[in-house]
Length: 372
Image 1: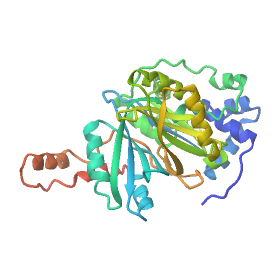
Image 2: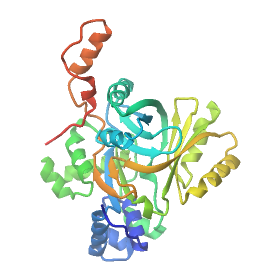
Image 3: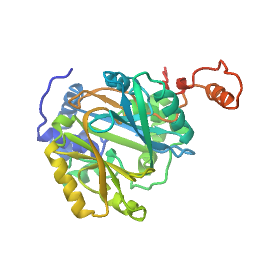
């Protein structure tokens, strides 16, 4: 377990710089912060070694796939909550896991390839865990905001200009192609690997690597996260809020909610509570004041339930300790099917009324893939 410490102003600016330009070289980062590049690099090494800050990236859009984002509430057998959380935390398509207050024990955010895969995950993976007593699933019909856009906000306009100078303009509309997979897997492993190292490991030319990364970044196909331990961030409290809005107002209200400083995630949902959003607050005593401000600003929005996160166990594929410090990564990757279709074929055979086969347990489809 890492020892506790504090972050000074330079640390906060460094995190903001890497949120703004995650692959910028240390010389440029140092120039933006007014320090030597080697000083910035040493600072970052100290923060990451202590688990106080970290960088990650993940694929956000793949050609030919429209992923399904779902929020699964999980009830656990008394005394088995942490066992369940530790088990499903190893699943590479589980993005977040929160231990929360209120009418559920865990909230898991999962990203799967289609509705059928979501059904198999809930039915065979979660449904067969001995520590799980019940689950409730809601699909995101639209994801209006997610955490990669969130900033600590410690840089001025000049500093941002230094970091973003010569950066390609955002174009949108791109998706990861099959030819990008090897490169993306390496970036998921360590998103600050230099172009020359990535070229060596993929067998591509440095020019090709640079061009592909620029294309993926411009199109939003590759998302980056630079996070800081929540206990030291100034925003230590996470609250999930479920709300109901008139159907013809959901998109407009969700768009406004997504723009709030406190909002980390906002989604339209498939259920009666048709909006779910997660906010970061500076203290627990702000929860009711925040809700009151929401009611005044958005009277059409009725908050129907809320849950405070006691422990964010997994955040964007990263395993965290109770203070929100980084322990290790379970790289997020949702576009692999762990085994062949034979397990599903066995299930379909049973549904047709045939004898049980020997093709394997469908739950195996959701166990982690080990790659060399």
